[in-house]
Length: 418
Image 1: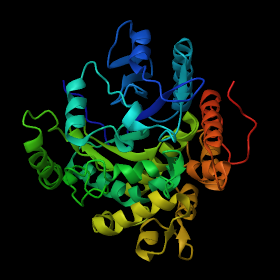
Image 2: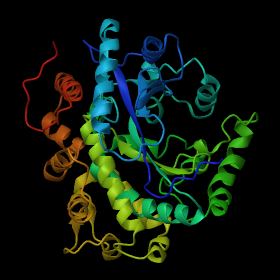
Image 3: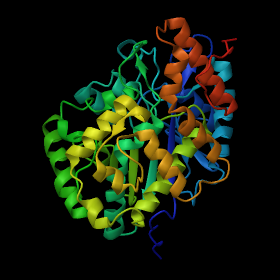
């Protein structure tokens, strides 16, 4: 008997990526394979750990925690992720390591420090590296949260894709956490997305403009998005190693093999409660859009890539302070106030009108809505002329926030490395 396909918002899948760093120097530590060996008894690419699974990523200093299959909702997941962060930290302690949150390491030197996963599945990573050169920030120095949302049929796929396309441009305003790379501010609050936009530039169709094209059926998606990607990569990938739907690197990608859309533009936060709060607010807003709470499905379908991509880039740069002056966009999200408004104003509005968030996550959302995204708070804490010592202090504070599942505030802290 075939299981019934999951419908809109009947389940959710989350993937959270963490960097492994040395406990003393906070430099990246490439021992994800040893963590998985400790958990499974041998080096594996994935191990089930109850409600969650642990798995490898492209680089040996990154480990992914994800829901062990679709979860019915987000209740209790913040605690589950926090528990497994503690379990991994306990494994890392004798290896001289610990986990650090955030969307990128502000001091990593990818050209020198990158070590790719070299076990099971490594031919895929080797192919990526050969074609795109993965020793760069957009490949080896990035950590994000992915949200996977299901659809049961073509009609549901179209509704979900339309809603995600509309909301995606302002997601960085909520989740940006990467104001620095190479030990200095980049001019972007979401530096991870700034480099993500161009890291597949050898084959531009792989990423497009990050915002997906306006297609609302599987047939059109495969024709408009996937077929050109496969055709463009084929001369560089004669064995067809990469010619699968996951090669598509837009900010949200259709995963027809599991009937979900995967959202990929959310930087990691400082603690699981904050990641889950971001996921909850994004998901609740998408539910409202799919219910046509703010406007019709037909009107959502009308949005072309260009204006959404321009807003996305503005939010990657300015995050919560990005200005929104387009009355059509504000109206599409039900914003009742005067324009221009900031992206944070828009998120405050959405938080007040969508379905209540699960217990325990409201407080984490309020930290963002009241004090700004994590990148804003990090920038405040760094001060106007941050040096390496100051950056390391911030990294230490982030590690402590993750360890204790506590929020990061922009005010100075007395935290120091032990």
